[in-house]
Amino acid sequence: MVSMKKICSIDKMGRIVIPVSIRKAISADIGDQLELSLENDILIVKKAISTCVFCNRADDNMRLVNGKYICSECLNSLKD
Image: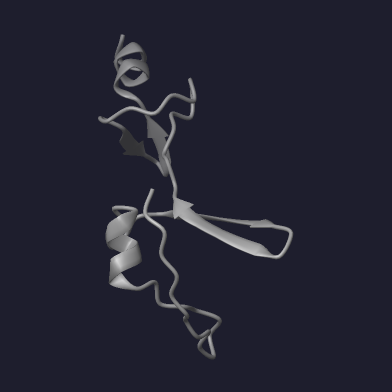
């Protein structure tokens, strides 16, 4: 695990820019979803992992259907 520290400012709209070095460290690309959580006074930002709406498994071949992720196995079973 790489340890990094960057200082960012919050703009008038409440947004922050995540520096490229941190985005690269978590393999985050434009359009990726991030999970934000708060533990005591610590904001944790991590790349969200998409899981199947039916079986809750993560799959490299997830399909987005009507805003929900479905794994290949569940998608195949729906086709039957």
